Image (cartoon, rainbow, N blue to C red):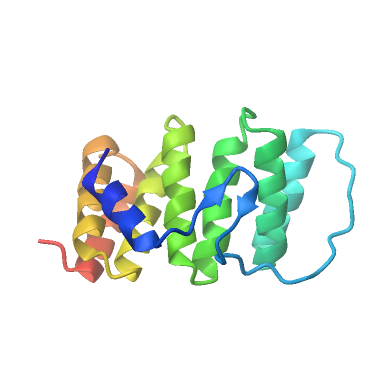
Length: 166
């Protein structure tokens, strides 16, 4: 277990995301009814959820992505879905849930093409939560694990400066 994972759990103050969705008051889901939609393929379901992210409907996207991940946890698009789930939280300023979702992505989908992005976003989320030392540790890990990634070569230095990493 990495130190930042331990420290992050301290920051969470008992709020957890279980397999049943969001609990512990961390949800920003409005009380709206989402019409049931029938999908023929996992790709159609993913595309619909991603479309909600693209249009900025993050609450509906969160629900759709959670449903996709529950229904298709082993699908080739699951790693992407986990990333976009984290983005729905990040975009709404819920950085604790975002960091948790991105860490879950690293844990469940370490070979995903989104793996470098998971690490970058964990660091960015931790920095915005005021956990600057942990954020810097995550950025160092990004540099070690994915030195050739776009996230490392184009974005890490900027995010390290924002966090005050040395």
